[in-house]
Every structure is written in structure tokens, then in C-alpha cells.
Amino acid sequence: MKPHRPRLVLADDHRLLVEALREMLSRHFEVVGAAYAGDELLTLLRSTPADCLLLDLSLPGRSGIDLLPDIRALRPDLRVVVLTMHVDRILAEAAFAGGALGFVPKDSGMDEVETALTEALAGRRYLSPRVPKITHRVGMDAVHLAISRLTPRQQEILGYLADGLSSHEIGERIGLSANSITFHRGRLRKVLGLASEFELVRYAILMRLAASEEAANNDPDPRRGRGHN
Image (tube, rainbow, N blue to C red; front, side, top):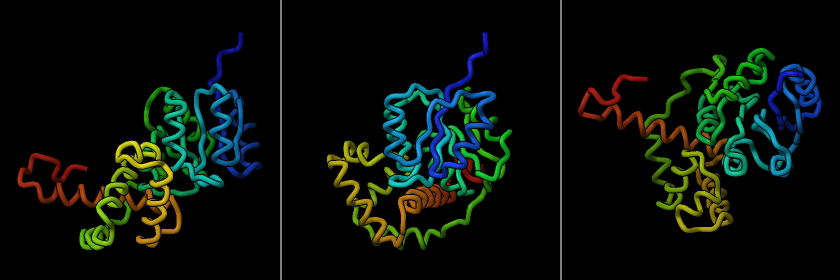
């Protein structure tokens, strides 16, 4: 009998890349489906049993970051590895907050992609060493200026976005519909001058990290968190 190969779904808007991945990964994985847009991926996952998903962040319609909470709700046992052109630590943290277990840049070798999938299938997190450990820092003056432009409701939603929650989950937390949260997200992007959901989620996590760093630096007890990375 042939050894069991984990069932893999591919999600990327570049068909040539999907076919290349299908060919190269077929030695160790059974590719059971491919999707080229966000809504198409969710439809596929509803009908196709799979063990792991290789997910691009730049999908048409909805970004991978925006899809992750829905994927987690739909298939909580599915192991997700993000394969992306965005080599960015903040986006990696956003992906992990949304439920992904791996984050790998697209210029990585196939060996690293396979390693990330194997680690994810074992329930372990994998972050490519190609992703920088330190991103540019945001001063607290900039944080306070940005927050001062937001209503309390917008600040609350921004915090939930940093936690990786979907519009539906945020709406349940604060008693609004998913459509209302989507509207608020659009208003947040406009107020903050951000062009995409990518930038909004990245911004939310960056603000969270800056606030956490300030809290650690102001902690009078040196045993709690100061100087530990």
C-alpha cells in the first residue's frame, strides 16, 4: 500500500504558480483542489476534505488575512500555511493571529515550503527565517495622534482586528451586524489613509505592538516583561 499523503488545497490567483506547486508538491501531498479567489476557496473548503491549505494573501475579492477567520470557523482542524510575496513581520503576526500556522515568502525554496507544511501538520508554528525579526517601530506620539482621530467604537474595532477576528465575530462581540462592521472598517481605512484591508490589519497589529511596548517600558516592576523579546 502507498503511504498516506496529506490532502492539500492550493489557493493563489496565479494559475501558472498553482500548477507548478501542484506538480512539485505531489510527491508528498495529494493536491485535492485549487482556488483562485477568496469566495471560490470557501466554497471549495465546504465540499472538499483536506488536511492543509497553502494560502496566498493577495487573492481577488478578499485578502487571505480577511479570509483566515472564516477558514478557521469553517474548518477548524485545517492547517494553514501562508505563501506570500509580502515579506513582512507584521503581516506574519496578523496571519498567525488569524489562525495560520506557517508563513513563507514566495521566493523561498520548495524544501522550505514542504518544511512549513510538515510543521503545520504536526501542529507547530513555522515562520520563515527570511521574514525580518524587527519591523520599523512606531513612536507613541504617532500612535496617540492616530487613535485621537478615531471614535471609541472605531478604536474597539481596531483592537479586535489586531486579534484576528472576522467582521462577523466582531459584530457578535459588540452587538452589530457583519455589514455594519464592514462599513466601520471602510471608515477606518478612510480616516487612517489606508488603501486596503492588508494595510488596515497590519496597522492594527502595529498599534497593538507599540502600545504593548510602551506598557512594558513603563512597568515599574522590572521583572515583568521589560527587556525581553
